[in-house]
Length: 161
Image (cartoon, rainbow, N blue to C red; front, side):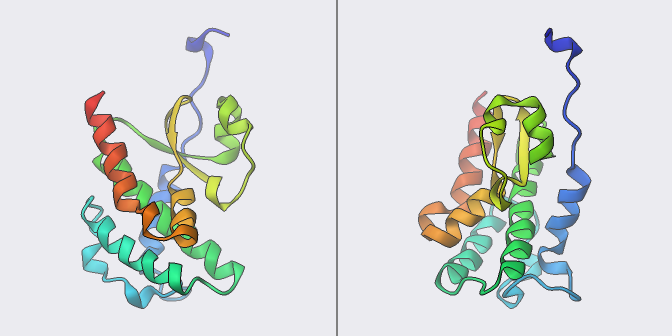
């Protein structure tokens, strides 16, 4: 099919931006170990991801003990990481859900749905990243999966295009 007949995916920017604010802002149902986060340091700058790395480092040592805490933390933290990338990238990027991305990308159709793939930061069907997955990898592997380094590389590669 000719590309000009294809509709772009439906974006979920508002929903993921709201999730990113819940990272520290939901006092009724707080993010796991929220006391480790200093809200004023989370200003959506690339530098703020060093603070997120410290938070994730503590969670690597003492991860959430139940699925509900894990899901809430990964969605909110991953949304924050993605929003930092989106707001600091020179290119237009949008959040899409796994289901929406799978409609538009063979690559995504080949993946399994999980919390890691639930939200995808999308430039186009060939250029996307998985901030929620990066948060999961940090919890599993530790600082070798730094979200600050991840975002820095993505933003820098976009600056070079």
